Length: 62
Image (tube, rainbow, N blue to C red):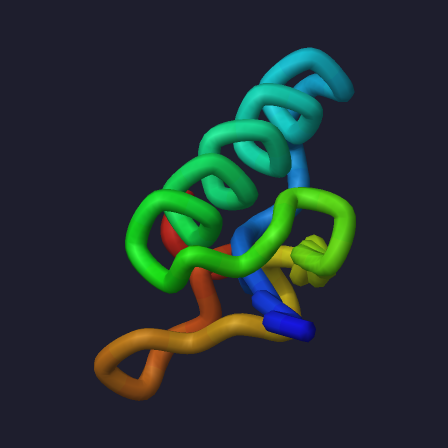
């Protein structure tokens, strides 16, 4: 049973997240041969103040 975690910054719409889950599931089924009902996709959304690049939080870039 494949488990896939997608980590991304918050702010996507429910429709975007729905499409993401569908397309990731399809890609896993196509590439691994797993059955669609066994593919689990987790979306972990992060706040910009909890994410930093090059020593700066994204929330501090303005």
